[in-house]
Length: 249
Length: 249
DNA sequence: CATAGCGTGCCACAATGTGGTACGCAGCTG
DNA sequence: CAGCTGCGTACCACATTGTGGCACGCTATG
Image (cartoon, rainbow over all chains, first blue to last red; front, side, top):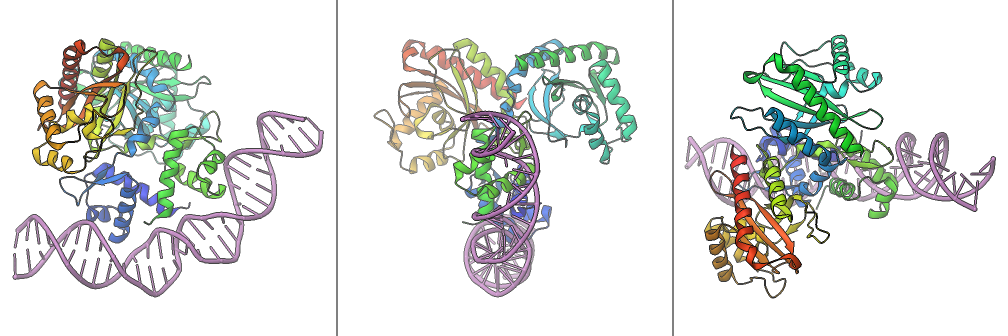
């Protein structure tokens, strides 16, 4: 709407985060902006402490320490983080697969907030801060299924991007799937977004049943046995319920 | 220098992080800026996904999940953050003292990245995001001891500020101490920076032995027994080694 | 030795952000 | 219940502010 320079600077900051360490020239190619504009932005962000020059190659920029003062606040946001930690570890111990906690980001996607790793040599990997689409992941389905119809409509109004043959791109099919998710209490995703990965997720709800987050167990195809699905789903749903209970306590 | 609106927006973002959930009025008092300016800034940050309205009180603002996508190099990849959490909790359980994870910030200081609290009524406290000098803290020594000679020289070239009688301000003495730290595998700090606090720290290393971070246990003088030092040091070093191993896995 | 890419600086222009002001709306409070 | 306060939102004339084209010096690279 406004504050063009601010919006653009934040975009640059995100781009640096994704491509760090990155040079001015690379950023000008990404954004198609004049070099001097990009450089001025970088200098400004640097002076504010959000960026810094790479130590080994001072022509490259990377994220500075200032974010560390803000980042944890985002994690602890709803104290959900602390409530989720122990149940997640217990779930990991029960199934020995990687567990993720994700929160919806303004109906635009799910953001990984915390992770508990399993000890298999082959394991799924999503870094804290990674984002994924709402309509094509188990965590996203778990959250969407417990939103109001108007909000679901809002999401399905956008074009549902496909990431492969399994992605549900039809709004009607998605709504049907969300109904099933609501009934059984957990969502399942297989090859809808990333390939070779299966994920089972359940929502963490607030007092008024609005979804705050989703817990998910994700595992590589090689270890996925369809027969285990009901048991895994039950465990994930129980974990999510326990986090909900702890969070409200 | 320039980009006034950008600098100010980032200040606002940091203020929201410190005071969240916060209203427009509170922020105008903090900054002494016109209400419309502050509000415009908040709306812009919100549209960019960096802020969001509080769910219970929509007039209050808090940090959005977008911030998580921006992470320093040290936290990139197989997030150090996630790798460190469980070992830190175990160390806390073993010693029942507060544990800190810190990363070096461009050789200018250590920044606290994560914390696991003990349950004593009297405990040390360093907020996440706090910075401390490299040459006068256990965490700083742990990192410095595993840097190359040129980098150590670079740090000792600056004036080593004193924070009391115990601070090592002589470059030669500091290098000698760093040698001892390297030998025994952990660093000890008593009253070098903050008074009444003792800290024991060990480094988390990367594959090429460059230090990425330091784990530290810190405790008030009242509970510090010199006889426990070797045991505490061993535990901290083991924890750091485990984080290193998990991080590389 | 030429080239490419970097950081840095300058500057006229107008697009951009500014901030005073005002309105409608909740939730308190006397 | 009327008054108050603090919120979100909006408008708008002004000039501060950011813009982006250009050019310089530098350092690696081929």
